[in-house]
Length: 350
Ligand code: AOF
Ligand code: ZN
Image 1 (cartoon, protein in one colour):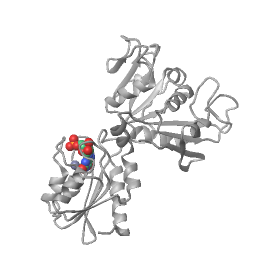
Image 2: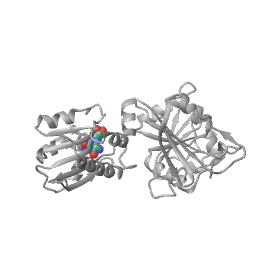
Image 3: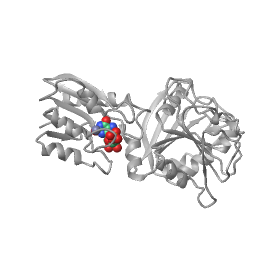
Image 4: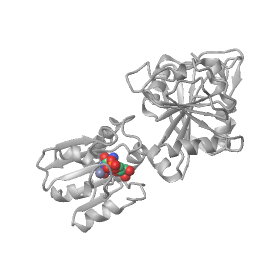
């Protein structure tokens, strides 16, 4: 059956529903679902939190959905995980048609859910609005395919081209709106990563304050074990702290997960691999110029977001923007954030 403009409109609603789970469902994907009968919406749902009902089940709820059409941003699952297979439920409810955005890259799936529905005489269409549905699951997809977290570098660049003052301090370059946006990202990424230099210069808390949202996990890379236990990054909180060092520290709060690596193991690639193994799908890199450059040069960075601010610093540390094209990044999006101009660069990956 062909896809109409109203089908696209319904899928867009499912995409918007899926976004409501941001920051709460990882390491599962964001998923939204909508049930339509005779042109009217009779059910809406999304994956609300990890371990909870899938979007499809929430959309079905207690509604009578026989002979309806389901719009779902991700291929319905066909396996027993923390919850039973959505495909079985769709079949049992006698839903007539399923319109899917993206195929699930999980090795247990990759089209098996779609095949299963078709085998049970359900009319399935795949790929509608898939640039949007793929975007919803970009962290999940990258992590499933590579085992590494999707890393975003975020930098504010002053009017005269510096990302930090001469001492390395990077606070207050960008506008209030940009700072709120970064806090929104913190609330949606699994973890925020910094190195020792940033800890000593900025003593950042890396928590969410300008908006309402949960705090991200924090990752501290401190090769020679210099960080102080009293630093804000270790302040008591409910989320996890991963601390990478060559030394075992006895003076850090007990809740810090210490991961000791030897000289050979101590590199960004190895560290990110370990974070991936610990189900960290997305990392926001708020580190200094050196760490950011290393991440890009090692092909470990998937996205660079630059906030071009209006403020002049006079002098300071700059970021070599020629790295952006040299490592295959292209402009993905441009927008305005308060008085700052924001550019998002992406590189094609997997
Ligand atoms: C769906 N709808 O809303 C989500 C899906 O452990 P479980 O039962 O929660 O299953 C997790 C897997 O299910 C996950 O790896 C992915 O393949 C799929 N996620 N599928 O049909 C949803 N969140
Ligand atoms: Zn499911």
